[in-house]
Amino acid sequence: MRLSRILFLLLVLLLIAAFVLFYRGPFGPASPYHRFHNRGADYYSELARAADVLIVQHTNFIKVSDTTNAPSQWSPKWINANEVAVYQIKLPTTDPALPRLIRDLNPEEILLAPNRVYMGFGVSRAHWAIIWERDEIQTNTWVLSTNGDGYVRKAYTENR
Image (cartoon, rainbow, N blue to C red; front, side, top):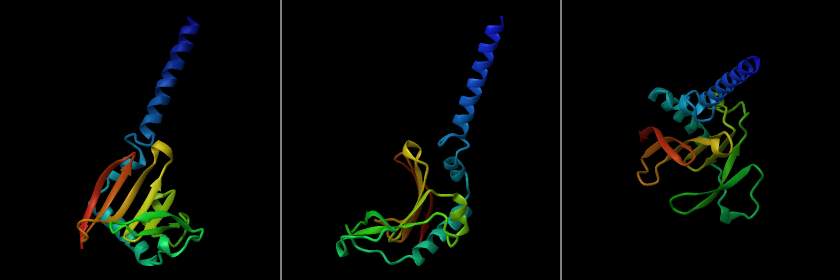
């Protein structure tokens, strides 16, 4: 009788732990990914303004053809629609000069390319990103989207 009670309690604890891990997990209902998508258009607009600040502050991109040795703060290459390759700028995520809204998201990496801000979260299969970029076809349109495991979801669009 005692053994069956102990096994039952262990099973209940295991089920509770599995539920909590799923619920708070990287793509569970209470995950940062889902919390981000439950925001309103006003929040997305403010986040777009914050990303615009980063784009305006950092305009000194180096074309890949200009140098063979990119400075250490430069990250992987970015190729735009015109097939111009530049080194992305990797910003420190703890920089107090970052706009408050971006700091509050606690991104693990921030990469800048011309007309593009990439904020990455998580690792491996749980990795997802918020991206603010100019549409390459409709160049007067800017899109705030997320990309989680290859699934791109638009959160906000703005015409300029």
